[in-house]
Image 1 (tube, rainbow, N blue to C red):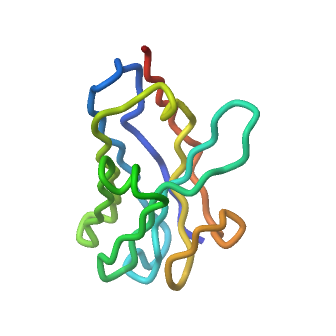
Image 2 (image 1 turned 90 degrees about the horizontal axis):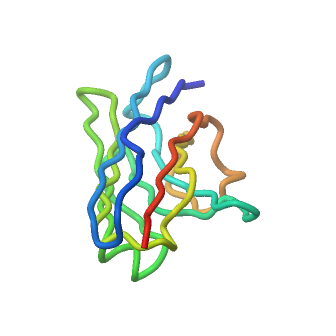
Length: 123
């Protein structure tokens, strides 16, 4: 399995932008689909976005697709999530996840997980 470490979370204000990164090691990075999930207090893991080995993105919803951008760099074994126009509803712990194969929206389909990074958006 690949090991994942997220970074880049923090406290921002409504309307701000924030970038998250996830560094991978221990696996054949280019073979994995990388995804971002988030979990707000008291809620389940919500799919945010995923990107296949070839760079094809999938987003959770139209609101996320218009504000968030997922990308990956197979030469540096990293995946990024650029978030813009953040709102308090985006507050959650954001997790990077990996699976061998194509994109999936169900967190149960992912085999490897990072420890998560907190994103807090104040109103």
